[in-house]
Length: 532
Image (cartoon, rainbow, N blue to C red; front, side, top):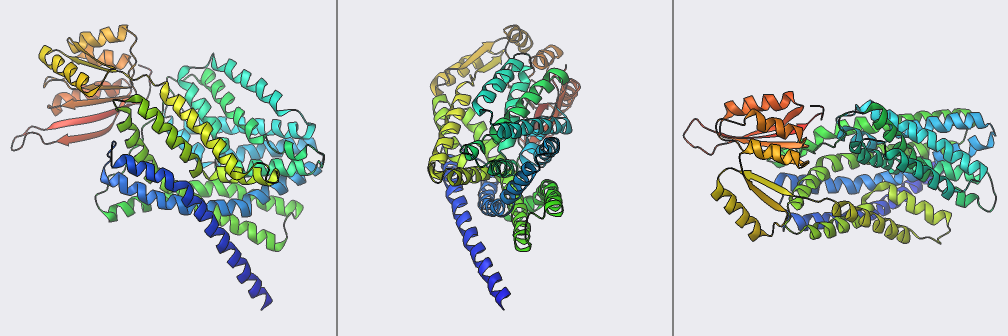
C-alpha cells in the first residue's frame, strides 16, 4: 500500500511539473504564433492549407516542448552529470579523452537539427557533412574537458580558435561560409545542450575549488567552434561546386482529413529520426549503469521515464516544426522579400528573432542551469532577454546585408515603359528594366557580374533560344521559374536546363485558354550543382 501511495505521489508531482513545462512552452510559442497570424491576415497572405498546418504545428510544438523539457530534466541532465563526475574521478586521462570524443560524436550524430541542416545542402552528401560536424564536436569537446581539468582560461581559447576560424574562412569557398557557421548551431540543439552542459557540471563538481562552478560553463561555447572549423576545412578539401540551401516545399491539403494525414505521414519519419537520436543515449545509460551503478532503482526508473518523455516530446516538436512551421516560414519569407519597404522587413525580422528564441527547447534548459549554478544571481528572465536581444540583432544584420534588385528584360518598348511606371507607382526603387533582346541582355548582365538568386523566363511560343538559356545558366541562380504557353517547347528547354544541372522541382498547368487545346504551364527549377 505504501508503494502504491508513493507511486501516486510521484505521478502527482510529475503531472504538476508537466503542467508547468507546458505553460512555459505556451508562453514561449504564443507570441511568435500571434506575429505570424498577424502577418498572414495583413501584409503577407499565405494559402489556407499552410495556415491550418501552421496552427496545428503550433499545438504540437507546445506539447512537444513541455514533454521534452520535463524529459531533459529527468534524464539527460542526471546522465550527463553522472558520466562527467565518474569519468573525472578515474584520473585516467586517456580513457576520459576517448569517452568524451565518442560522446561528442554520438550526441552530434543523434542531434535532429543536424539532419535538417544536412538535407538543406544538396551539393554535400548528408553523411559527409554529418560526420565532419560530429568529428568537430568530438575534438573540441575533448579540448573543453581538458580546459576544465587544467583550469585554462576560456577567453584565451575562444580568441585563438575564432582567429583560426576567420583565417581559414579566407581560403574556403564563399558558398561554404553560411553552411559552416550554421553548423556551429548543432551544439545548441535539444539533445546536445542538456548533455554537454551536464557533462561540464559533473566534471567541475569533482574539483571542489572556488572556480569549479564557473568552469562548468564553456563546453558548449568551445564545442561550437569545432563544426565551423571542420566544415570550412571540408570546403577547402572537398571543394564541391555549391553548398546552397534548398527551398522548403509545403504539402498540398484541401480538407481537414488531408491535413491530419499529412501530419500522420510525417510523424513516423520524425519518430525514426528521434529513435536514432535517443538509442545511443540509451546505450550510454546502460553502459554507465553496468560499469558504475550510478543510479539506484528508483532513480534509474525515473531516468528511463524521462527518456520516454524526451522521445515523445521531440517527435511532436519536430513534426510540428517541419510540417507546420517551416512551410509557413517559407511562404512568409518569400512574400516579405518582395516588400517595397525593405526597412520594415529588417524590423520585423528582429521582432521575430526576439520571440523565436523562447520557442527553442534547449534555451529553457540553459536558462535553468545558469540560474541554478549562479544561485539566482543570473535569473532565467535575464538570460532570456539577453539571448533574445542577441538573436534579434543578428537577424536584423543578416537581413540588412541582403541587397535586393529586380531586373526586367523585355523587347517591346511600350511594355518596358509600363513596367517602369508601375515600379515607380509601387515604390520599387531597386527595380530596373531593359528594352532589349533577352539573349543579348542576358549576356550584358552576365558581363556586369550579376548573380541573381532567381531568374524568371517567360518566352514566346517558340521557346527560349540557346544563347538566353546558356547565359542564364552561367549566372547560376539558385532557382529558375519558366512560364510557357507551349508545353512542347517548354519540355525542350527544360531538358537543356536539366542537362546543365537544374532539376524541375514543380510543374503546374494553368488553363488560361478554356475550350481550346492550349494550356499555360509554370515550372520551378532548382539548382543541383553549379558545375556547368
